[in-house]
Image (cartoon, rainbow, N blue to C red; front, side):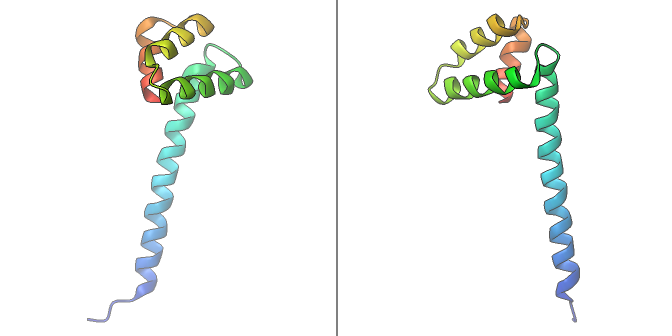
Length: 84
């Protein structure tokens, strides 16, 4: 059994690239959902505030923030906050 290390290394790089690409795609799609409601700078600010509230355990307050700031419907706001 003569297995070469080079194909395994390239395979590992390929799998790593695919995983990185998927995570980047998910991040872009999440931002795009918010960008329907606001501009990119405000999006980053609101996303940061929502993350802070979630870390502190105030998920309901984060949902209220998104609803108030973006006039997003309740169901979409709750789903978006959970996805962050």
